[in-house]
Image (cartoon, rainbow, N blue to C red; front, side):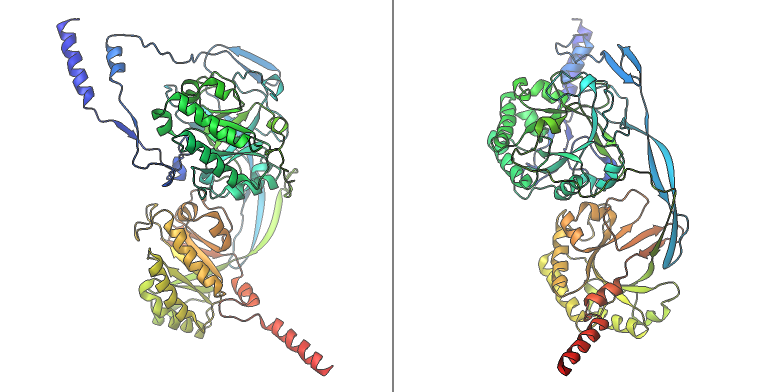
Length: 626
């Protein structure tokens, strides 16, 4: 070696030794527009948050490259022989597949006219075509191509083969055919499963049940997803995301998983989602393989059919092949025309994390399935009964023109932080149908006089409690003050718990991730027991990230949107606020006749409506005469 090369080598080695380690934190998805490849849900109970997955900069790769030393480890060949079947034409090639773009056709309803209060909307069924292309990264791969949403309308028919080679296995479709599927979790939020089924784009779904080893670590949308997907006749399976760091923890996760899914029967396997990088990069291959065996056999001993999910490179280089060959494999590899990293048998290939499917507002993982699992699995567990579909699926084309009539009411928010009783004379009854009185902790004692003033002017109203406290003790203090202000008074519109979100975090009042839902439950349950019509008002992102499914399905929802992005919360909203950039304010539309409901049932200080009381009085008088 020349002196010059020796000096350069020494400088290079010294420089590399002080380079900072690249830290990659496997965090939960922070924004719907930045959905990562894997669903790494952070859990305080199942994951050591102090640990960060570190990928060191490899000095030896640079050193070897400089001296042209060839590595002894070779990557699986990217040149493969593939067969693409399209109609009656068969093409054989020995090069990487060219970039392709597939299109899907969707029907959209376009509103034509809108008027205040009673609105007649004429909707015209319109067929549009859009290109679905995505770009993602595959671990340890230097190839970058556009992944294509290759989902086509399949209904109950099989689709011709994807460009991958699958070793013949029990239940495999003939002639290399496959069906299309998705996998979903809390990051897809509220899913319209009827729309998913009606689209003809999805034949099966694998649904996340939960994660970790604690019994309360259930995916907040699991029960809703299972019930609604099966109600439309969708074939489903489930998966459990592992944070196990030992064989014993893997067994415990299996027990928690069984407890979570015990009330359901389905016809796809229970998949062990094995991708926790801390475990994969620190434990021995023998331990990792034993953990998979422990989780799966625990469920299998209780009558469940199981499978394993993970990346192709992890399966190829970190897990014993004989463990994987015992059960169905679901492999994830992106941006490639074929499964190339994992050379074993696989039944499902997750080929893209960027699919767009009717009925789902976010990106969703797309999968090819090569095995008829319903016929192989039968019923999972063995003694279960799969519920019949109860929601009919649309099989005919909607009429070209449909006409519907809806009632809308407009609202003005009377914010006590900037307004007083003197401002009620400015309320314009021609522009607004009702008012909502908003107050935070400092203004709660002014609510009563403002309700009285609104009613004296013939204005119907409701109340918004603008929460800016973070402890149960303080929320109870505010509840007591508000309760005293409402006592002896009536409201024609709901009592809302309101919380603002700034920059995707509750920074203005220090809320942790789950604290908002906890405080909201304390408030709403109290006034629900006091016979108030209760609701939750929040920005769309807060509804999607901060409140669980059960809470939002129990109480009324008022959704606030600052932009035109797809809705994170897709459930029913009685009131919606939309930011209007032209006037710098919000357009508030109410679609629910709250006064009729509240007065008829007898809520918010009202007794049941007078018609019922009159009928009861007349019946009593008749009985006395008899």
